[in-house]
Image (cartoon, rainbow, N blue to C red; front, side):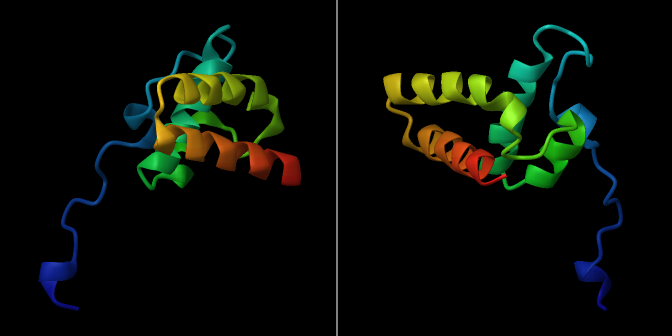
Length: 95
């Protein structure tokens, strides 16, 4: 393979650095994890967000927080955020 297509430094920042989360056990962790999973899906980095949060996209434990995200998206008329929150909730129902 040509070196033009090989990343010399593919390490980059890890998921823990890309997604700012409070420590596990912090009362705000689950809300932050829900936001990070939606952000990861929006950026095409669902795997990284899952790794950083310890939750899968569609984890039923985060439904209350995703419902808040959905409500905010609708209030702000943010179609993309609404779409991602709805996708999360559909996945949660299928688990």
